[in-house]
Image (cartoon, rainbow, N blue to C red; front, side):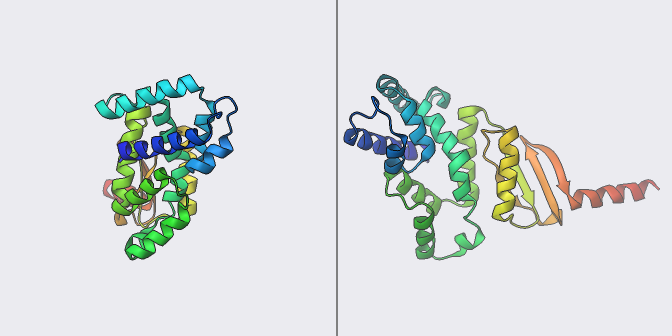
Length: 221
């Protein structure tokens, strides 16, 4: 997924720079955002010089071709930040009802959430349609681990978290672990509350864990 999205992103950027030949002498992030569809990536592009962009583009292509260390590419870093800061807000709107809907309904919803006509956004819509929530999340988490050495953060809840809860959890971990993409899963055994895992270590906030603790106390009496 990441190589395909990056290739589409490069295509959009090259197309934009062909139209805006003076961009690096007078960078305009707003114009770049209109063409690419991402504020994060547009901001990154506006901070580059022509020479640094060309060098980084060559590095990025080499990394994608040889599966080298992702952290050597500034463009890939901006893509990683896009997933954490921009895409997560869109992704959290894709609940179980979305994946239970028809192909036509899903396409309509994605066109509303990602209406931009850029190749990058079109590729993103394609992968959302193709992958499950878990598959999409795993692709992003593995990418961020390779890119930033980000810890894996998993949230378990007895039912699907609503958007407000997901947003609050992302903001909480965004302060502590700013380069991590929080994964959400359902575990009906929790009964209530939420359980967090950070790189496999449990931070338990579930009613189920409290019930287990009470039972252990009774056994000791």
